[in-house]
Amino acid sequence: MPRRNASDDPVKEDVIAEARRQNTLLKTGALQNAILNSANFSIIATDEKGIIQLFNPGAERMLGYAAAEVVNQINPSDIHDPQEVAARARALSLELATTIAPGFDALAFKASRGIEDVYELTFIRKDGSRFPAIVSITALRDDYDDLIGYLLIGADNSVRKRVEMELHNAMAVAEKANLAKSAFLSSMSHELRTPLNAILGFAQLMEYGSPPPAPSQQRSIGQILKAGWYLLELINEILDLALIESGKLSLSPESVSLAEVMQECETMIEAQALKRDIRVSFPTFDTAYFVKVDRTRLKQALINLLTNAIKYNCVGGTVAVACLVNIPGRIRICVEDSGPGLSREKIAQLFQPFNRLGQETGGPEGTGIGLVTAKRLIELMDGTIGVESTVGKGSVFWIELNLTNERQHVIETAESESTAPVGSQDRGPLRTVLYVEDNPANLMLVEDLITRQPDIQLLSATDGNRGVEIARTSMPDMILMDINLPGISGIQAMKILREDTLTAHIPVVALSGNAMPRDIQKGLEAGFFRYLTKPINVDEFMSTLDATLEFAKDELARTTRTEHV
Image (tube, rainbow, N blue to C red; front, side, top):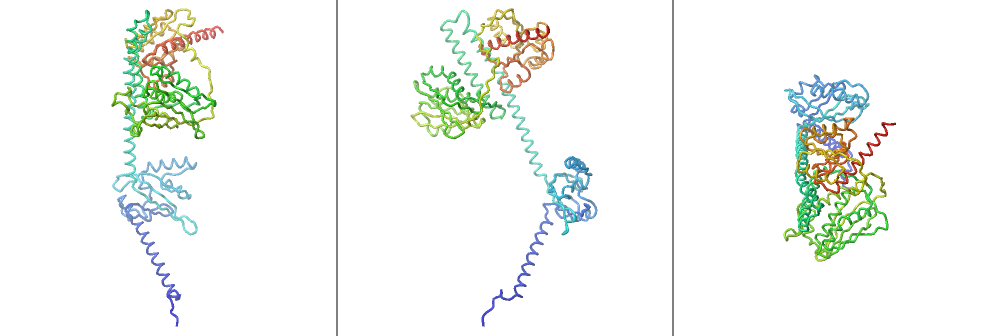
């Protein structure tokens, strides 16, 4: 007789299936009990009117009420901050374009319409203490989809709120420190530039003095100017890096012709290359390539690479610049030198602040932050920068940028006036320039510069209020204005003059040691006609003087014609 398996017995199979079902139910019940009895979550169930029907141990622990004290007694809005509940009602009324009354309706309105809802409000314990909570509310419905109540699952949000507050406070402290750092950098820039203005300004006057200085004097003046401009370059590098790292550097992207940028860079480094007998070759462009960058900052990065290629080259060496399009939509600018090259260890140290390679052997002077600044600038313009080098064979530094199909829009401006040679214009009658400056050395420097123009009379004031008075009584053709002045600032003085119909037409040129990019931008936005920074570059100063006086003459002629019409 064949043996029967248990699976062949229908009765036994039913018994096994029932046992499994009971086991599943037991597990489900255990899970439900675990959830309902959780001490970490408040679970509150209400009827359709919002009266509490279930208040689990977690809710008792969090809120301090026994279940018997709240079940069939109150609704959940009674244990919320009433002002926050009212505010939620107002917000929902505006959001949903309907009137929602404060109270439980404000908590359950979305859930009652099948909208998933999680809100953050303050719970109030039985003892009156408060804590932030995050609550998920869901509508409960029967098999006929009729509303039978609500389920609210809440968690203590104190830890997250505390972390958020700590993070907010940390960010506030960091921002305050960042602002203090920016203020310090701006102040340092001003304080360093003020004495440099006297050093470089008077040295330039001596260089072009009449009679000309003797050869030995000329050499000494040349050394002063070389050291002064180099010191200014170091100050600018440090301030640029600080601006980039603080996120305060603003860029002005535009479509830029690479051919034009290369030509400008070639002109700028020509003298340096000749001095070290370095032959520099630039590419010729059969195709017009345009990149979307900040023109000034791209030139700054390229000049840094070119300067390094010359500085760290061998005397009589070569520097070759090339442009390659290896990847569609990208162009690579390569600067190849014939210098000693870099080992792998030294390459790893590049692009690190204040790490100047070669300083241990008394190499070329510098701060070691030029490459770091160049890297940050290129990356801010969505580009990349890198290096390939072989010891004994030289190095290739490269910059890769996105190409653009946009073309430059050439706009005719009055800037061409600023390049006109000093003294080349028919000046006509005597013009008056008012200089508002409290530093005697700066005032003396400008006096000496103006003395070279016999058709210009210089007036001066040592504070902003006095400057406004003299402007109103003397009506100068233009005003040179320092920013940091006793009494009122140069910006305040300029605004007073612009708001006065008597003096509103007089162009005011800022001449300040506040030389951070944001200082210049804010000054021009405030209403200065031009913004010159200290130390004074004599050629730039005289050109600006000419351009401003010419503008003032044209403005006066236009105003006179208007009055006679």
